[in-house]
Image (cartoon, one colour):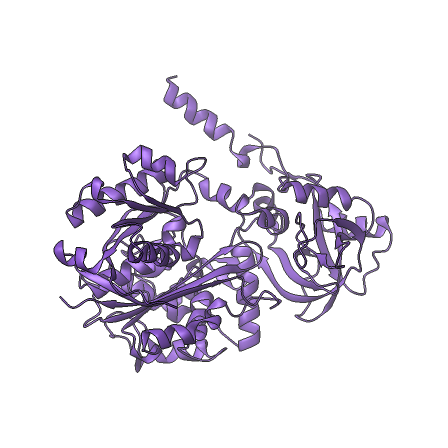
Amino acid sequence: MKDYSGVVLTTPISMGYARQSPHGAAWFVGSVLREMISAAGLTKKDINGFSVSSFSLGIDSAVALTQHFGLCVRWLEQANVGGVSGILTLRRAARAVQCGEADIVACIGGDGAAHRSFEHTAAHFSNWSTDAAFPYGAAGPNGPFSLITAHYMERYQAQREDFARICLDQRYNANHFPGALLGHKKLSLSDYLNARPIAGPLHLFDCVMPCAGGEGFLVMSEERARQLKLPAVKILAADECHNAHADDPVQERGGWTQYIEGLYNRAAVGPKDVDFLQTYDDYPVISMLQMEDLGFCGKGEAPEFVGQTDMRFDGSGPGLNKLPHNTSGGQLSCGQAGAAAGFLGVTESLRQLTGQSQQNQVSNARLGLVSGYGMVNYDRGICTAAAMLQGVDR
Amino acid sequence: MNIKDKMRKRLKLSRPSLRARARPPKHRSVCGSQFSAANLPGVLQLQNCTDCGHVQYPPAELCGACLGGTLIYKETACTGTLLAQSQLHHSLWEYFKRRIKRAPWPIASVQLDVGPVAIVHLTELDLDTGDRVKVFSHSDASRSVVLIAVPAATDITTPELRQAVIVGMQLDKSAERLKGV
C-alpha cells in the first residue's frame, strides 16, 4: 500500500454537544465548517473537497449541503458508516489530496438529537435490524451488545469490575475535558456497580448517551499547512476491513486482525510505542476487543490488561502499565453524537498530537493510534478501521 | 390557547405512553413482510436458495452465499443452540416498556442447526449457553412475525401447543395502559 506522505490533518473541531437540540444535522455540519475555516484562517473558497457523515440528514445528502453552505467543491463524499466514518473519511480525503483531486478537504460528522429522534434512528437503522433485531425488545444497540457482552464475560471470565476500569478512567479524563457532556460528574466504582440495569450485564454507565454534536478536521498538503502555520498531524498508516469473521456465531473479534500487523509494519512502530490509544467505546467490551485485536494484549486477556493498566491521560492512576486511553472521555463520557462519534477519536488525537489539548493534554504525545468500529447492521458491528497518527515537528 | 401551547398539547397527547393499548413494533422491510407472510403456516419457514441450497436469515432479496436471485421459503428444521442471552430492563418501544415494568424481558441469540444466527424472544430464564432449543415463528399482536425460542424438550408440533407458549408469554395481547388518562 502506498504511504500517505505529503498529506496532513489539521484544525480539529468538536462543538455543539447537547443532550437534546432543536437543530438538525445540517446545522451541526455547517457550524463545524464555519468554526473550522475561521480557526484555519481560510475562506469557503479555499475548501474544494467536502466529506459529510451523518445519520439524521434525512432526504438531504452531502451535495444538498454544498448548496446550503454556498460551497463549490470538486471532490465530494458522503460516508455514512457511523463509528468508522472519521477514519474512513481521513483515508479517502488523504488520497484525494495526494492525487491532486482536491487541495483542502473539510471532513465533518454531525448529528442532531431532536425529541425522540434516537427511537426513530434505532427503529430504522437498517433493514436487517428492523426485521430481525429491533422487534425483540426494541432495545436499540443495547440488545445486540448485551448479547456480545454476556458472551465475552462467560467465555473469558470478565467481570463488571473489569469494564469499570475503562469507564472510570475515561470519566477521569472527561473531568479534565470541558467539552464532555458528563465531564462535570465524577464516577466512582460503587456508582458504576450500583447503576441501574439496562440490558443483561450492561448497566447505565456501560451505555453511551445519545446526543447532538459535530466534529471535523481539515485534510491538506503538508506544504499548505506549513504556509498557513497550522499545527498538523501525519498519517503513518491507516487501514480498514468490514464484515470480517462473519462466521463467528457471536462477535468476539473484529476486522482489525486482518490488517493490524501490516499497519504496524508500514508505520514502523508497534503497540508499545504509542503515546495514547483512542478506541471506539460504544460499550466497554468493544474497547476491550480493540485492545486485543490491535495487539495490546492477547485474545481474552483484556480484562487482565485493563486491570494492570492506567488509562488516565496523566498517568495518575495506580496501574504500573501506562496507556492513556480515550483521553477526552470517549463517547461514554462525552456522549454519542451519531456519526460524529466516529470522528471523536480522530479529533481528540489531533488535539493531543498538536498540543492543542487544554487540561487533558498527554505530556509529550507524539504518536497515537485511533481505532473505529461501527454499524450494527444486525447482531454485531461490521465496520472496523484504524490509523496511526504522528505529530509534525513544528 | 396560542399555537405554541396547542402544538405542545398535541405533542403530549400523541405520545405512545398515553395510548390505551401498545403493540410490538409492526414495521418491517419488504423482505420482512414477506417473511411474516411465509411464516403464517407451520413452525419455521426460512429462505432457501434454489441455486446453492443456502438457508438464510434475516431475509434478503438475494442469496448471501451465491448472490442467486431465486429464494423460496421452505419449512426448516427448528432446532438450534443457545449462544447468548440477556434480560432487557430498558426499551425504546412502549409495548416493551410496559412489559418490562412487570418483569425484565428475556432475549437470546440462537445458532440454528441449518446455519443462520437468529435473535429471538426467550421463554425460559434458566437455560445455559450451549443448551439445545427449538425456535418457532409467531404472528404477534401487531400481526408481524417474530421468533420464539423454547427448551428443546418442549413439544411445539401443533399450533395449539405453540399458542399455549405464546399465551404464557402474553405475546398475543397488546399491553394495556395501567392507569386511565
